[in-house]
Image (cartoon, rainbow over all chains, first blue to last red; front, side, top):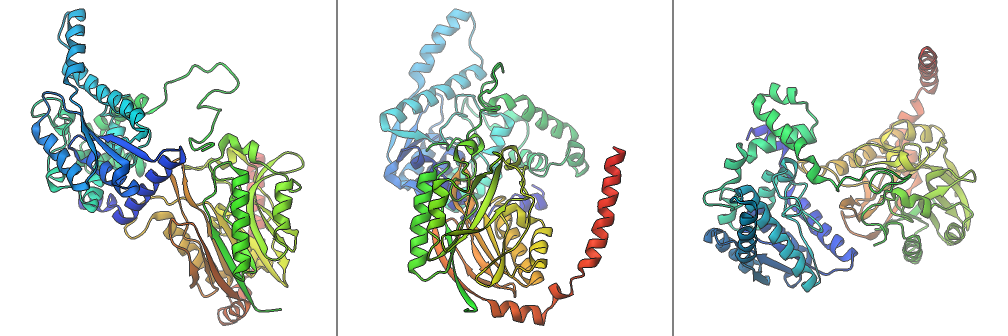
Length: 283
Length: 290
């Protein structure tokens, strides 16, 4: 990362952490809950969310759910367990292989072909979210989302899968900022240092799949989204024109995932357009 | 008349759209401030309603003669109260207003003149701009009110101090934004520098009352306080915590500051007026061309 960009993306860790803790406490308690739960994958995003939620609500009010698929790597599970043990929080392991395999066994026959990695990955992400929402009802708790700003902007996530949640404390932090805050709150170094991966198949890493590094994405997104520089200006600053174009197109193409389902406007006052209330309305 | 006035700032976290709950919070803080010897208690912008109201605006709007407002004005019998809410005018226009109440009566109403409608702000969609920037006299001296964004336009403290104000009340609902700032978060730094500079430039006491709490993930940071005419903070509240802080302002500090560094005295109003008139004419001519 360019030094001046590293500087620009540097967050005030103690302050940011205190704001995010306050946010979790406020948004959870305001709607009448005391507890949260979240999927803990062994990656940095869900680990950070676990640390923030524990700081905000105390270890008895958070619950980690580990949801491996049969091809998930043992090291991911080990990393997740290290978080659980470090924080001393309750956890549940739910193997999602059964329902996912049963589904595709049926669907592959029905469609006469083997589902692609994309479909299988999406199904796993949604299976995990279905599980989380079910456990949240069993547990009387809210689901904490663990998507960061880089992923959300790139649309590198599954709609109604890992992108779903009741509240998301880290959605305004770029990946590189997630790393900074994670270091501050004490996420284990085994997690801090490994390559980010959705762990959908062997040797998969996010950066290989995306075709660019998170650092590059953060630099370009920060300048385009936060600083409002044009694509041309970013290229003038020495970034690869193809890469800038690719990233901007990705953000645009995936914008639909970040919005509520679109509604055909017929009446005088339509939800989301001119029927406008804050989410905190009445709570 | 004493030179010294004890001020209390109620750095509260209002509940969005819950007028009754916020009224109760106000009463409680008024009582506490009074018990602890304050002569004035200052609440943040929209302390009676919360900030991200959107379509709730219509429900929480109150006329000055509404029993809720009357009851709060009543509560100013033994302590002056500066409070803020969505005001509905007789002709049913909506304003973001702040009232100075003293001895059970309204002394002054300021209607927010600058309604930010950029970034996360959307005020002009719901409210009308106030058009008056006037100080008011209370306890033998002149004060003025600027609501949040009002204070980000230098003409506003200029107009108030040139009309005689020696105290500026600044109720605010300012979110802490841009945590990337190296030492602090962007808006907090901006506010602090701005108020210090105004206090020194205009030789005034500034009382900044900023709310705390979260609305829809927006974090209001607090950091309320009082700046003296020498640019030093007399009292500063913490960040992110609901609190009642006290500080004394001494009019003799204004006297000394305005004598030692007579910037306001030397201000050439006629120069300003002449240029503004010329610029105003140019703008009118342009408008005509369009």
